[in-house]
Image (tube, rainbow, N blue to C red; front, side, top):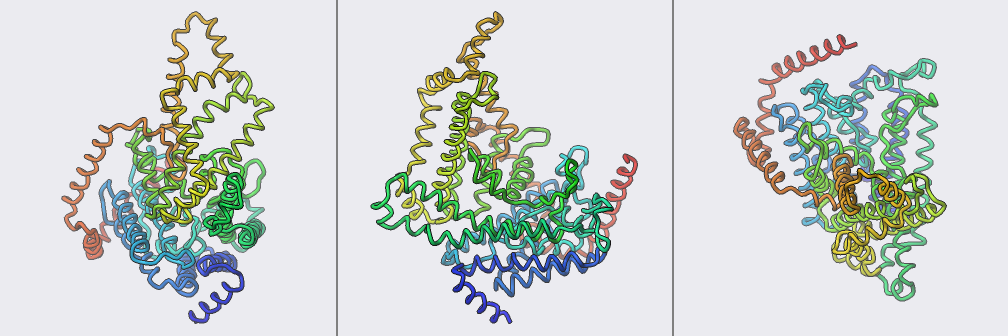
Length: 603
């Protein structure tokens, strides 16, 4: 049967022009819609059947359609290792041990594909699903950890996702192999899945809107909209091959027949066509999640309508109309943004302290390494980080010129500023995303060379202007054009208590603004602004490394079963299963009952 399916996919690939990898992903995503219709009609109280159904459909995707027999082994290794680490490692370092294990296993997959296999983007591999699994299982470890902490000290986000009792194997496997998000995401927390399976996710559905035969509300219209929107993106993707092609960039005609302006706009359009694949798959996957019910996110208090954005992963409109890099990144791969913020950026910071340089750099490294090890990723990431800082320079110094004295009301000329920002941002993305597609370093450099590395020069000139020897003069000149600054200076001249010079006031404002940004703005997709480097504290980093090293040696000393390769420790943990299960059960039961009693008292 598998041979018959593969032959049919090959035939369909030739008919549509889609490569087999993209076609297989698309088929799995489309099949999730009828499978979700069936899932919604499974008995609400039959939790075992629901979990088995998830595993069965995912197995069909992996074995039957994607033909990834070794891929299931890869996913099982990550899932099994994480299960035993989160269940048996009883130290405060458990979430980080779990994180390191998952990232190391994924790194093995990345390195194997890069150095020991011939790369072909038209051939499907399991690393995409493994990347989704890393997000799900690393957050799972933190939720287990949070379940043992003082709930009053957790953020609201973390309290909603705590796991008070380590799940049994079947619901855990059902979570890992949830069919609608297995290959492409979206990723979500175990607490959401648990409430979804037990139908408690729908407790706030008004009785008059609740179906008679099930607890999951109707979502066919909303899911169909997502499906049709995904089909629209797919149509554009298929038609785009008739007009633009990445291979055309490297032809002699591209340089000889077209001027520089044409070439940079061509890359803009080409970048848009790259995104169409993700728009198609992520929108359809979200629709399948909406149809089965896990996309439900409560009732809008203003309209009284259901919200279905729990697992939303992309906002195409916000991205394509974004006027700065940070806004676009916030609209892209949104669940990855949430994971990096809540389980990396905020977790690296010491309890009670705001995230700083260490959190920013660790999040950046995690995001880059999570995507892969090929040079193209890092060219894109470094340029993205630089452009965020460039954007801050421009917004801080140019934007106020187009505002009235109150610093809020836009002038008529603000529309011109907004348009220029939009075009500049989109052209910049057209430039920086090319290495993310080509991945190979020489190919990426050759691509940038066709447009004379224009964005690299823009970034260099901007940094020179605002951080170089003439930075104060440049800043002072631009401030002299800002109505709000002019009004502020006139007011200060009349204030006898004013004690700061203009230069001193500017330095204070910049320092305070930088500090506030450092404390409150998490890097979108892990990409930091490079002005974060200004706050580098070598003593802080050395101290943190020393603490990590001390914690690791302490852990190994108390858990001698964990060896350098880590797998012997997992094997030992498995052998201790029968001896520890009663102890774990009693301990978890006591914690659960205690938490339940405290909750009852508070209510």
